[in-house]
Length: 152
Image (cartoon, helix red, strand yellow):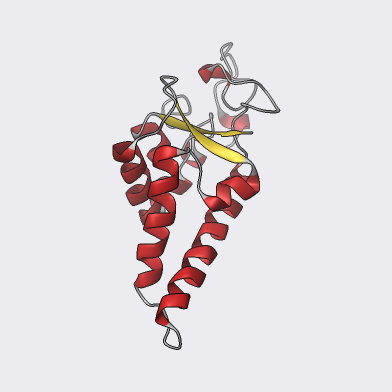
């Protein structure tokens, strides 16, 4: 099961097959990513912090337009715009830029594009696909959109 899902569902490494000679040495190795530095798979902590920066920014932006009332669902709309538009054309959100990470397509194309960015955003909004990742550090929204989040 570890090779298929590669997430916390696989259990600890000590209970996996001991005779597996094709074990991955670092996150993203199977994708041809370097072990560290620019182009390496982004750590989960940096990805999570970038997400929370985007959520806080969306709440602030929505709050500017709805003050003195609470922003309510406008925060979700602002987060959607802050996520889809920059990722579609530039490959990163404001929070990702602060954390020095960005989204790259596996096929090497320069732009992520609107359909992939929409899919990533909708699945990230559900949170469950975003917190289930494989050994490459790719969540379900990364795998379904054929993208990977890497370091700058």
